[in-house]
Image (cartoon, rainbow over all chains, first blue to last red; front, top):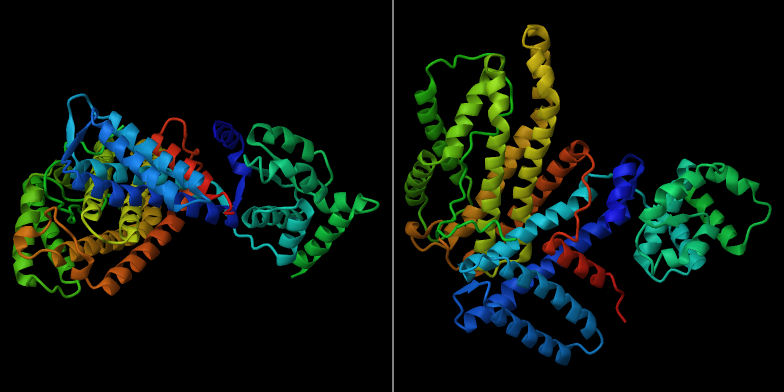
Length: 252
Length: 291
């Protein structure tokens, strides 16, 4: 994430976020925030009340630890397939609660009617800060990629994740509409960067933020995308598919 | 680190309108001599009336009579304002803004600290909303919508501060050039205009939503603004939904207005903040396809 921030400090004015990336990021932030707050609101608060706990201090970690142990045991019984993921989600909530509890000053006890809302209030501010770059910090472009471009990306780069295919298709369509090279900057190694060669074949360059400026320098040495494509003597099947899709997208 | 709790242990969640609207418009000059005491009293009366007029806009309540609420609310707001240093400061600052030619230096000396105090108050209101939510069976959207409505007010303050930090030197240096000074004030008044009405409307809506929820769950006027159990069965959930829809729409409008003025804000450092780290972790896990 530091690499991403460093890159944006250098090149924020040249960066855009596609509307699909913005929507997904905001939905994920909201969802993840809600998971934590709901958990604190219901099972945790009810548990503390049922145990007659009125206040908590930084030495009361065992109470909270017992609660999370019980939750994880129940989870193991309920969700066979995704119990690992559910466990990790629970672990993320646990980390947050534990860290906040331990940050209380020695000897200080807070009523649970204050401690739990504080956890939620602080998280609201964190969520808001995380949303900020997507809500105006970086320029957002409304891009609705043509279905045929999305399909060509899915087939061309063997994409398993529909949302990623939508983001990549947005970048490609923007690139050919503007006739300007786009560099798709991401930290997603598994779904996107591991397919770098396939994506380059269909004319989209991806990069980790650490190397983005280097890649950008390289691509600006090339001819503009349309002229570059016209110079190619024979296209591969994947290139033909993406170029056909692009023609449709650009003319509609 | 827990910072919001800072000894907020009272059982009151007194969210009311406390401000003369944000001191925004710059008037070139006004009659401010010897008005201090009169202004203060007049501002309290004006703000109390503002709260009472907001009450008239509430949907019908099942348990309490509006006249009883009015009496109680008048006293609560009056008592609150009389002990509120931030409110007192807002009057002083408004006086500077009303006669900016004369008080431009005082205005810029006070405004940033005043805004910091307003931000703290808004943080405290977020905490109060969370307290209400944690004693309720209300949907998550109730909480997040009001939180967003408060946080967009903070964003507005940030934007305002950024804008006037940029412009203040020019304004200060133009004090010997009346024409230029007036031009700069006009430009300032032009950019804040679209925000002023929207901010006002937004704050009114979120307070009405809070009041409707709180008052409908109060058996007597003594229970108003107290920490208590909030039941959705005591509310008309269609009314709540319509408040939420309205507020979300207004927040979106404000976001659109503020966005171009925000500039680049770096991504939050996940390493340093435990809340951000936890949200980020769940984001990664939520993004894992099922199967």
